[in-house]
Length: 141
Image: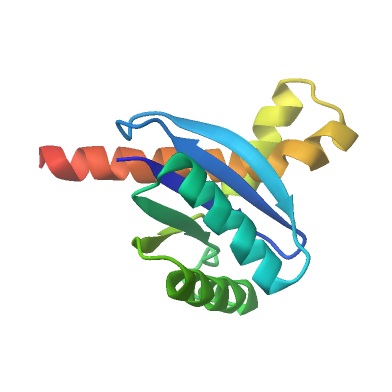
């Protein structure tokens, strides 16, 4: 049950991947956004390379639970991705994943320049970790 996790931003897409058992999430790469078709092709290539069973995309819900412009853009991206692949594409509330990533990198004494290059990958990993934990807990209940 390998799952790809995505943190979709305006400039970059952070990508994470689970192990084949769907237990551990690992940051994989950051895709620099170009044009939507190329972004989707890059993700499809990753899905095929890792033989992923599903994709989870972080949904940027506002702190009050409402959806804003960012959520609308991610929804559009998800719809395009769903049309391009034959595996499930799910969304997952990503509130604070980028902020949590930044706090982690700051506490690890990573410079501002280096943080910019990895923060999206770490955010994708945190989204995927949370999603995997939810799946694990739902199976047990």
